[in-house]
Each structure stands twice: as C-alpha cells, then as structure tokens.
Image: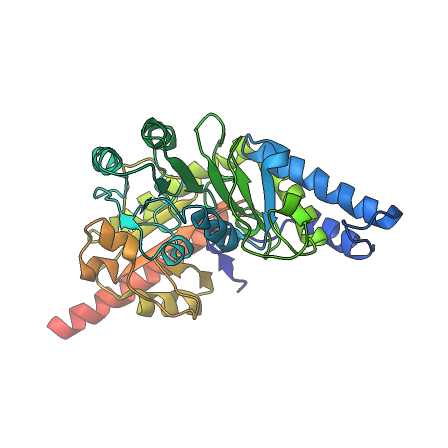
Length: 372
C-alpha cells in the first residue's frame, strides 16, 4: 500500500514543474554576480523569481531578500530588534523563540488567537518595540488578525514581523494591506524546493545582514545565491498564486475529515475548531492513546502524519503551542496534526479515516476484553 502523505505543514511535495525548472537551471552555469553572459543570465533568473515571490504576498520585488529558508529569515528579522524591546507570541515557531530568548511573551486565548488587549497594554508600557506574531500556526492552522496587530504596533511606533511560512500560498495574503514590516517565507511549504526562503521588508524598513562577506542581495545577505533553488521557489510561488482559489476547495476535504473523526470517537477533540484556520490543517487529540503510539500505528498503516509538535530529531515532544492555549498535558500529549495540500486527493481522506477507524476499533475491543 502506497503511503498517504498528510504532513504538508512539515514539507509539501515538490511540484513536477518545479522539479523540471530546478533541473534545467542546474544544467546551466553562471554566478549572478558575474558580468559576463552566463552571469547575467543567472542574474535574470534570480530577478524573475524575486518578482514571482513578491507577487505571491503583495510585496515589492526590490524588498525580497532570498535566504536559506524560513528559519534564517526569522533569525534575520529578529536581529533587527537588537536595540528595541521585543514581544513575541507564545505559539511561535522554534526559530522565532530561539532567535529571541530574552523577548517578552504575549498571550493567546484558548483557541490560540492573540490577546489584543494584552498586546496593547504591553506596547503602551514600552519603548517602540518589535512584535513578532505568525500569520498561521503550524500546529493548529489558526490565522491571526494581522491588520489589527499591525495597527496596534504602528500606533506605538513599533515594527511588526510576521512569520508567514504556513500562510503563503494557502490563503490570500497582502503584506502591504496588512501592514507587515518584515515577512518570512519558506519555499518548501507550498511545493517549492527545500533550503530556500525569503525575508521581505516593508518600504523604508531595513535589518542587518546575518552573513558577512560579499554584496549579494543588495548587501542584505552575503553569499552566492542558490540560483536553482530560487528559480524553483519563484515558480512554486507563481503556481501557488494562480491556484489559490483551487487550494481553498481543500476546506471540503478538511470538513469531511473532521466530521469523520468525530463520528469515529466521542472522546476526540479538534483544537481551535471554531477559530479562523487555514483550510488545510486539522489538529486533534484522541486522549485514549499517546501521540507517539498513535503515530506508530498510523505509520504501520502507511499514513504519514505528525504529532502536534516534532523536534528536529524526530522525537515527539510536548507542544508549547497547546500549552500556551491552556490545554492540559493529557490532551496535548495525544495531539496529532493532519495537513493537506496541492496533491491531496479525496481518497486520501477516505483511507486515513479507514485506518484510524481500525485503530479505534482495535482499542475498543481491547478495552472491552479487559473489563469483561
């Protein structure tokens, strides 16, 4: 049985057109900093991709800085707060939490939505600050009220950084309309290659380069550009933008999945069920079984999903996102995330529900035999 891949928030399958474009680019030669013909050709490819990535999020091409991914982009953005107070939400990705270890922590409600009143209080009692809040959560899919956050931050002369990694390509996104000053993106979340991302600046916004050396990326990020990766990133961004309305149809898949899950077990809980979420993400808890054990059983059934949070070593660990939402240890310890995307098919949902249903049935029989 072929594996059913339902872990798009970890990484999406690379689109076939992108694979072809990356391979084609790798068969050519040229450093974008060279002034000869092959160098100019490579430069043109990078600049075309810059325009494609900018268009995906309603930004200006000249404000796009290509990076090695969302983690580097987040680190570079947080470095711009060296002389500012910093506030971050408690549900941020580890690359934000790790980049700002001394930042003050904001609050979220039980759905994972930012407490705007608390944010306003923090900003009133602070010097102009940098505030970092993700657009969509990687575990729950909850979408934050970005324009309201930006208004509050700017009202108090601050800067607003947004980790848009899980939102770009999955929902309409306009950086300028929403008032985002610094935006992080990652190619591999919507069908591009791994190892390439971007930090996008707002008009008049600058931040220090993390990498010192040459003058690439308008001296904002030293190092020879990953031309093939950037070309793939640009093409994936263009396709994602063109297919954005089609992507929204995945909400019917999510609705079918969540209704099916609830039909299989009365004890199952879907986190942030009634909050605004991306159309592709479901995070649920089946407190009957620990996440690690459930993941193993699903993997044996060829279902590729993840726990609510997985660290780089692949081990299951407690979710800081669910903890910040006030979720108890038992529920958080059984959290499973399902995330779908551009290549998900209706039968993938059917097969997952069938596999999970068998696990529920086996567990029910085991409990019944133990109590008799």
